[in-house]
Length: 451
Ligand code: IMP
Image (tube, rainbow, N blue to C red; front, side, top):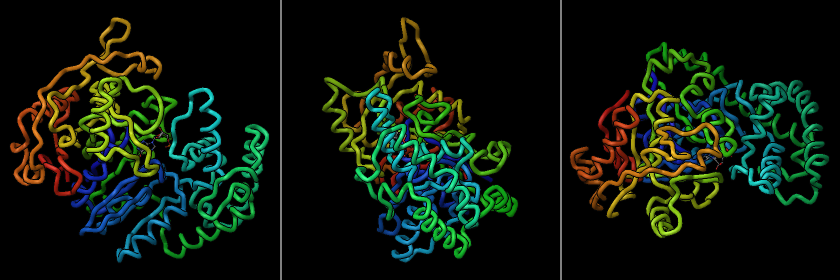
């Protein structure tokens, strides 16, 4: 049995909380894409854990798997594992040997390329973690995989091939003098990030530790064995549909597939396995965006104060970067698009409490584009940026004791909020499985448990 959790918007929909609630019944939690660009906070027995790479289930004693579709920065991986151990936990994390390793020069390139692109308004506002450059090398067939770290000769051979190319790129194409770059992380400065020996030494050591702790696996075979043995597996998507490399608002996207198809290619299990289980879309009751690009429902001008208040109430600041997020009204065409791209069998709507206390709540039902009404997103981001939202207006709902609501169940949610939720569920064509009414694990109203 499997359940796949997918972000229905632009990331930060509160997937972590739902993974946490539903994951309680799972044996294994596997990530299938992305890397340490995804931030999630887990509160467990009064202790707060901030994770960006390790699947959140690892905090609760589940086996955490980083599938082959992930890009893995070993420094982050071991940093998070060591932190968890210091706090008295014993996380069981497995890493796919086919996953790609983020190398230090990827991070430098990510930052330099963003800078260069900003001259043409093309920067995506990346998290600066080297995600895009690592996926580029994967597709360019010059990447270094986790399995390569286990074989010193292969590691050195691959580094000797790729590093000089990257050095030429940064120095000759981007015209950067490395000694002048003020950037250091994970024990590397910009110079060392392009030095074969320095990278080899550190990554060989990572490989040694991965082997010693027996962390690497053939993810597909490992997960298939778990499923055959009757275990339940949760696939934890990171980011969201509208920043999917294929289905998102290109080029303001991340470089992987958060949509449910990614759960197949990113783990080594077939679509029949993923499709045999449930696929749950996570929707935030409004929209938030970290990063650049158009946002038709953004609260601007006379709604700026409302945006500020919503940002504060919802804690809308990037978990990885701390950046304030842009705020908008719910974009229903975006969620319809997500439901189709991933085939949602159910949805969870989060942050319903954050909108409480408003006189009215708006949702963009459709777009007006050049006099035409569109119910789903146009394929080019430029056309999406030209869309005029056609809003439906709902009566607001009061601020109530949401913890008590969560205890009492769905019927305790204020009626106007229920009208809003039922509208969203009907429009995306998927039943409502859960409603998030606060940041704590207990503040989720569960209507349906997929596991
Ligand atoms: P990257 O994934 O760091 O390459 O960033 C590419 C785009 O995806 C940028 O617009 C980021 O702000 C966005 N992004 C990446 N990870 C997340 C996330 O976890 N939540 C929301 N946006 C994200």
